[in-house]
Length: 169
Image (tube, rainbow, N blue to C red):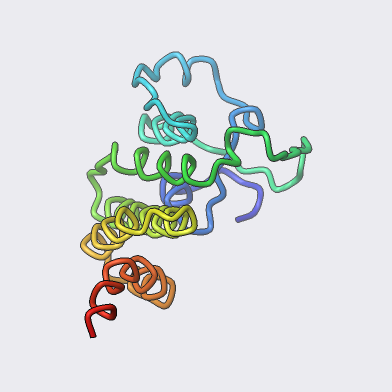
């Protein structure tokens, strides 16, 4: 993606390669933001809805590939809470449904990968049964999510349920 007006900015936002933008790293027309009346979901990645809603409303996006600001992350940031961030992305992608088949398919893929990422974060936090539920939901949305990571998280999420089976033997 080079510097230019993006022909299909929504497809770019829905791409797996898209790294979520921060509003502080972006410039918006006041009228584009004023027209956006949709309430943000109560999650840490809610600002993603602002970008999507502006594009859905027909505003163009110009991508500049030169850094104009430096962004520093630290462990105390709200965005560093991996589980909360994964919950936020699932919540945001669940709040949309797009009219075009291409965009809706991309949204389903993003939602499935967000569920897979959340399942991984839940497993790391010891919440295997919740992770298993997310894996099932992800597979129903998009079969392409069924890969090595899905299998590994699935196996780990089953371990607590398999323990009693092995103990009886």
